[in-house]
Length: 130
Image 1 (cartoon, rainbow, N blue to C red):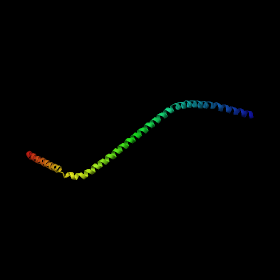
Image 2 (image 1 turned 90 degrees about the vertical axis):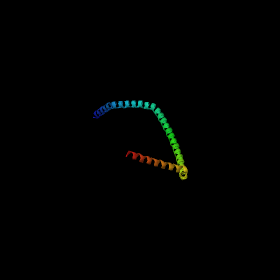
Image 3 (image 1 turned 120 degrees about the vertical axis):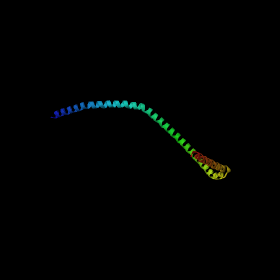
């Protein structure tokens, strides 16, 4: 009885080994392919990392350049705003004085005369049409 049990056990082990051989062969092929893939990645990875470092450096340089230009534009805008505010404040002080000059009163009179002449011509031309 013991011999028959041992023979059945040996047969089961032999069948198990026979079924495991294709699995072991597949594992060996996959590990071989993984080794090739790993070697290819190890060769190309340093180049990719170097390119990434160059891209990062270029982006950092571009960002700092844009930041400087924005800062310069902001400074220029602030300076021009101050100048414009000063000019407007000065115009507010000098406008009443400038309006009292005889040139402006003459200018007002000339505008009034031109308007009167244009109204006269319009009335004159309308009478001729009727």
